[in-house]
Image (cartoon, rainbow, N blue to C red; front, side, top):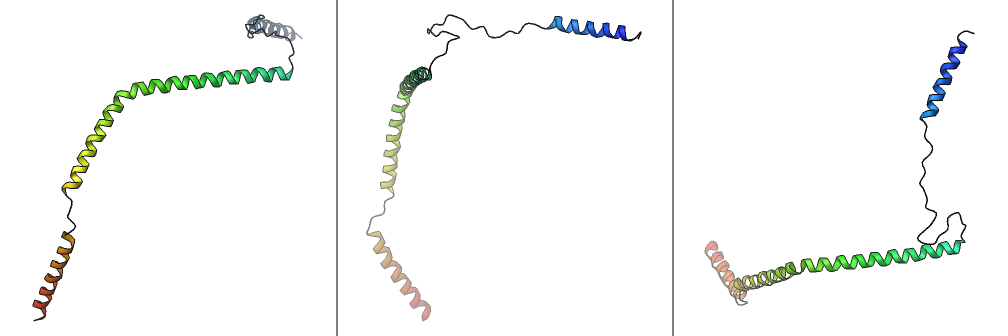
Length: 131
């Protein structure tokens, strides 16, 4: 019996100190006045909520399209000097390629002449070997 009383006092003190450390719950404070005219604590019909969501989706899509268009224009303007440089570089390389193609072009008469020459060289070689 003597141990029950101090034990109860210790447990009671632990309980009281635990309770003194707890804080009231801090939830997010919701403003009662809304910029959009929506009254909190009010029930709205489903069609009205769907209509609001549809309008919000349209606005989001419109804003995203505008932002994409602005970024696309900015990208084109930023790459305009590079485009002119690379276009000129492409033309120069194409001209060099054309001159190289024409430089090593073999005339069409070369093939039949080489064929006739090879035939006679082969016949002469065969004649010398078989003698």
